[in-house]
Length: 236
Image (tube, rainbow, N blue to C red):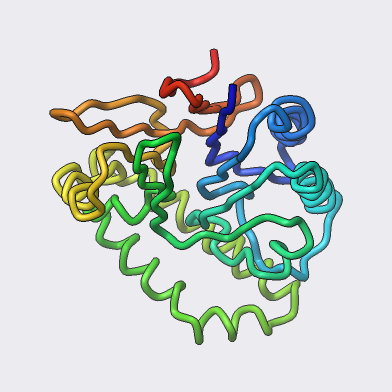
């Protein structure tokens, strides 16, 4: 039976080797059993440019390339941590980059995919920050800085993000439900799959279904599987 996997919010980094091991195990053993894998953002904890090199990056690239080399499609939507993953990374791995919002036909069900950060409109400060860092001219300038400078800037941004997050109410960091349902209505879909909030769950709203992918931890991989027969649920 055909099936498709969805993952997000792995936040891979050199400091979390167990997370990397979980991802590599998924890519080598489980992912090849599907016809497609969708990574809905924040595969990496941060990304400062396709020219960065490390053992972790090499491992991840090789795993994705090995998967796509077997004829398994791999799609990626940028997250708030790795929105600078670009065409070079995609070309080197065979991965397909998707826009912030992507409609797919999931075994006959029109389905909207996104990372999820664009749905959290109550977090005004973050949305203002997002608007700035997604400006093409700012990205061009940043990507032309030396790697060491980019790394220092990224570390400062991450530190500020952790500090700000500690003082935000939980509801501010979740999706705005009326906005989210309106987006689904606009896209004429009854199914939305996203990540970002780290709140794994399946929500139902008068015929509509919103599935939230969870974040990965050292002892748990949040993996959603959709099957050709219409069943869709998290792997247990």
